[in-house]
Amino acid sequence: MTISPPIIILHRPQLGENIGSAARVMLNFGLTEMRLVSPRDGWPNPAADTLSAGAFEAGVSVTVFETVEAALADLGTVLATTARPRGMEKEVVDAAGGVRLIGDRGQKTGILFGAENHGLPSDVVGLADAILTYPVNPGFASLNLAQAVGVFCASWGANQGAVGRWEGEKAGVEPPASKDDLIRMFEHLEDELERAGYFYPADKTPLMKTNIRNAFIRGNWTTQEVRTFRGAIKALAQGRGKARIVRDD
Amino acid sequence: MTISPPIIILHRPQLGENIGSAARVMLNFGLTEMRLVSPRDGWPNPAADTLSAGAFEAGVSVTVFETVEAALADLGTVLATTARPRGMEKEVVDAAGGVRLIGDRGQKTGILFGAENHGLPSDVVGLADAILTYPVNPGFASLNLAQAVGVFCASWGANQGAVGRWEGEKAGVEPPASKDDLIRMFEHLEDELERAGYFYPADKTPLMKTNIRNAFIRGNWTTQEVRTFRGAIKALAQGRGKARIVRDD
Image (cartoon, rainbow over all chains, first blue to last red; front, side, top):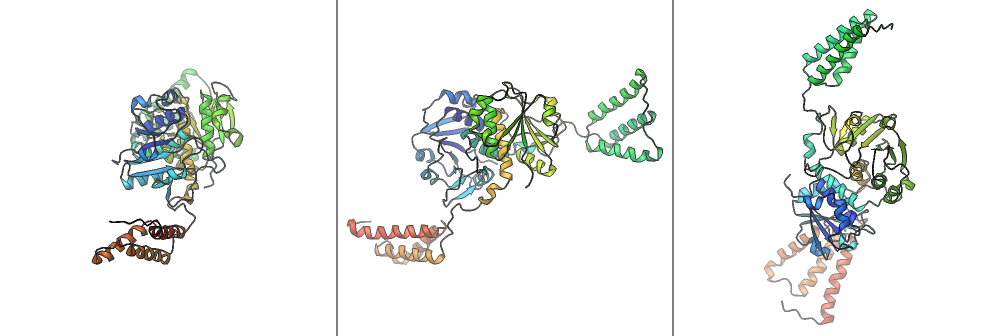
């Protein structure tokens, strides 16, 4: 995707802590432009700095506007975040739907978040192209402002494909062991188990071996893990002699 | 879905504020069981209460464990949250992938989150079935603990279908107006525009009318909106006479 990240717009935010936390989570997910409409405690705000974990220095820009109209003036698409649909004739999207909508429209986009105490006024929601809402617990619906920003930013980040390199793959850098390596490991193990008198009765031996092999194969081991385990088998086998432990069972 | 919500497990959390914020966002998205492994400042913790916005009273239970092994003992599936894959041979999922994995396994699940200062130790990650990670900005990767909890909880909530009732639908309770209503509105408008000398030159009139109709039809108005606008047309038409404003253009 080549869409530039949306702009996060906080409408009349009250607590500097929330502004700072919002900036931190924005930058965590690659969003760098914040706009503040009439922040209660002015700007800059030391409490915001503290909670930002350095996000303002590391890349999040802040512009302060007196009116929401001025803050939206250059945007093509605006989403307004609310806890409920409000009965307005607007499209309603969740975080993932909002990210899709932004991609479909391909315009400069702002996401509006309301004040801590009572959210966005209806006339401000009225300026938006769509309503962004989350599937919250109706009995406990009030999200912290920075969390509300974070849920959207995470959804934006998840859609940018950064995790695509990882998901569904093994995290390790090593490829799985060859079947040849594995089979030699099995034979090594089985030899030693045989020597230890493990396989009994004889007619059950093939089934016991198969069961063990199946269990190990599911692990999808790497060459290194095979090597490590062969070392373990060897140690067990040699150690048995060395320590002169007699097993009765 | 009938899977019970996952349990959020905070491993050696330091700040009560983060524990409280995590509980708040858990309950926002319907998660109600929190486990704490050796919280630095003990439990209960007044700072946690303050930031919880009442979540502990409203439904989030907390159990404290001395060891992570005890906290995981009754669970079938465990995801460990880390900022990077760590080179371990485990499946790596993002938030949405984690929610799918939980659904596929259908077992009692815990999501492990590490301490604010250095995350989860590798031996604790080693106890997990899969690694949960988010597609963060590599240059600013450290999420606030409560935000990390929030991203997962929001993804869980989004998958529970609560927003499914809304997404892609108009939020309004009113159905769109009938075409008959709309056409009478257009005729009303066009009559008044005609009377006002708007349609000029005459040979362009049909095209002008079609363009106006098209613009209004795209709005998918409700009966009430049609009624409101007809009132507006009427007011404009009558007001023109009443106020005796003479328009030259």
